[in-house]
Image 1 (cartoon, rainbow, N blue to C red):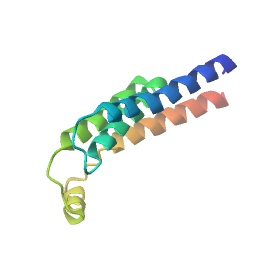
Image 2 (image 1 turned 90 degrees about the vertical axis):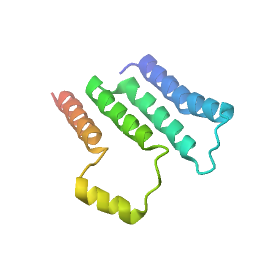
Image 3 (image 1 turned 90 degrees about the horizontal axis):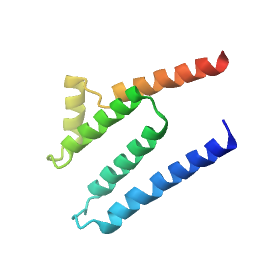
Image 4 (image 1 turned 120 degrees about the vertical axis):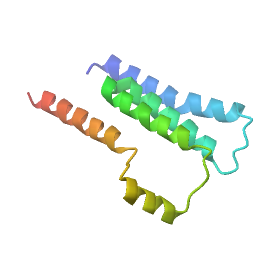
Length: 115
């Protein structure tokens, strides 16, 4: 990787880490006593950084996680016991497809470097 490309990547990452989240939080007029908006803004910032480097498949899986979290936002809060019971009954892991896609992409990149 060239020095110019590394510098560009650092610039992109720095701007994505700082600008969107801080600007949104500064300008927001949403009541966020429990920090949920901060969490959603952080989620968007992370998914934006993923878009810089990931494959289309990983990006798609990340977007599904964001969509899932947004759907959950504003729903009634559940207790730890309700969450545990729900997880055991449905076996629905909203991060599984994303993490599997990431693992495959990293494995493929590693194989490419070994060749």
